[in-house]
Amino acid sequence: MNMEYHNPVLLKETVDGLNIKPDGVYVDVTFGGGGHSKEILKRLGESGKLYAFDQDKDALENAIDDPRFTLIHENFRFIKRFLRFYGVKQVDGVLADFGVSSHQFDVAERGFSTRFEAKLDMRMNQDEGLSAFHVVNEYSEEQIKQVLLQYGELRSAPAMARLIVEYRQTEPIVTSEQLKLVLKKFLPPRHENKVLAQIYQAIRIEVNQEIEVLKEFLLQTPEILNERGRLSFISYHSLEDRLVKRFIRNGMFEGEPERDMFGNFEVPLKKVGGLIVPTKEEIKINNRARSAKLRIAEKV
Ligand SMILES: C[S@@+](CC[C@H](N)C(=O)[O-])C[C@H]1O[C@@H](n2cnc3c(N)ncnc32)[C@H](O)[C@@H]1O
Image (tube, rainbow, N blue to C red):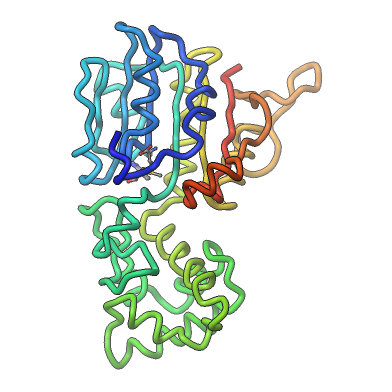
């Protein structure tokens, strides 16, 4: 396994969650370094199939040479369309390990990490137009405020947005170092990394349209699952986890579903077991596992 690229989180638990049938068809929508995909392939027989998605070109280098495996370089918001393209209508399970890979964090130029000085970028798909530079330099003050408020849950969002807009009247904010300087007064020395991480998270979610993408994706999953097919999803922040949890419970993001003639909710999925989080031992070995939350569901 390519351990340098990404160390898979909750590996056994997530793949166990799929309840793999050796001749089944599965999808790993966040291929990355392929850690979860390799585990799925180990449990599949000769006639099983695995389709994987990743929108990052870098992940393509980890493609697994196996006749049962197909890697699709696309955004998983188009899952139904691309599975159709490969002649697949229904699958037995979908695995997702949302967010950014260690590789994406560790390559300074990608701009995801607060550890490096880099150009403002944060695109998971290097061919997309919208980058962190655009968000910081071209969004209106109101839009920046909303991004920081909604996706970073930052109370100082209005003042931060004002400072950004003021500063960029003199010169564009091109690098992470400049952004840090502009927002310096909001970064208390003892919590600098925490606040910076919230700011980065907010911009990254906006750049990659992560909330819209997640919603579009979730809405397609009941349709592509076979009866008793499984979803096994790892989230890394509360906005993401809340959407996954609500969707599994209600089949929607807001409000409540209709009831059937017996007064039960009519929902496409039922949860399997409770929330799963990594053990202390796993977090010790792999710090990136610390905020992981795994939820499993089955098509009813
Ligand atoms: C946390 S990593 C997955 C790591 C993988 N499970 C492993 O074991 O190596 C998430 C990966 O999903 C990809 N990704 C995130 N959002 C995506 C999307 N909407 N469409 C396609 N790929 C996406 C990222 O580019 C990244 O490589």
